[in-house]
Length: 424
Image 1: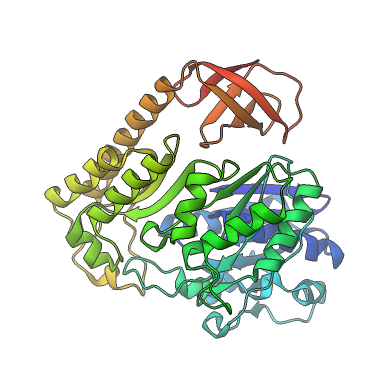
Image 2: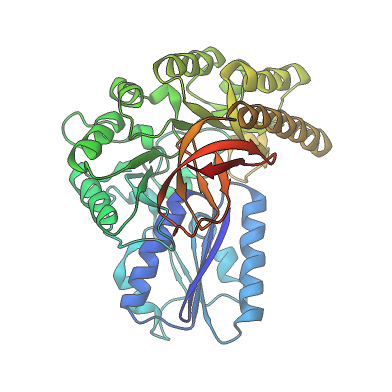
């Protein structure tokens, strides 16, 4: 994902996850408060080699478009390999994932003689503070960080080395941030982090993601919609499952970090679940919340993956009833155990990724077709497009409703990618 937003002479280019999107807003407030102008901040992602390549490409483009601007690079790719970005002639400063959230960093960026690289040891960070931001670029939805970092070591993943250990934002700070955003007009809040189902393990008491969710809904009753970002289903606590079943304001959409549907592949990935766990979780959640819709991350062509192993992942789409597929062609990240395993040929990876995407497209088409005639509430993102509670894209005839408004509509059909609906 790439998002570019420009206000005045400050431009922020964001790659990657929803947490990065949230942190870009924190940086915007710090940069504006520090009077940082004529600057481009590139917030990078490190999840794949392609994400790193795109970030470097964006940096070069930014220098061509803004020859006199100060270019600041941060994010996971910069945290993991700061020297690589510092060596680029186009880059003025490189700051780490912890430093990018500190106001003093941006006050220092205006000083010419500061060090080019300010990236500390992310593994030494033990706390994550809540940042009270006022809003986002539009009024549709806003993200609230509840957690950062990851204590797991999946063999394919470099992100723990960019984010550090798992650490949670205290519940009171989360509630305060949600309340402020709702007061500023946001109808939907997304709780986000790197591994949000690990939430609370480092806090006193027995706080969990489920209890936090209940707390937010109870203490901010004026919040129309609460949504969760990607979760690890095997870590879902009983309170979370109950909240999904019982709380109508908690949206019926879960994005699952599944990664594969073959047990041996999952073992080699060092995942914490088996194939049967994923299937049983989806079945249980569908019984508890019949309108729930699932998205999932699945990797194509993990090292040593045979055709039979791949077929197990492919059939997981049907067995779990997945609708929104996020397919990752395997990308060997230097420094991870998977990079040292026997690799699948690139052409095979591409073919398998294509088959997974086709399977996902068919699942989405069936989902869109089955929605015809249904009454839905749409959170408008602009005058003609929004999202249903289960996160399906919805297109409406222009109705002169500002982004962020909740509109009741009836589904009249679909265009293959989104629902078509009429305001009723």
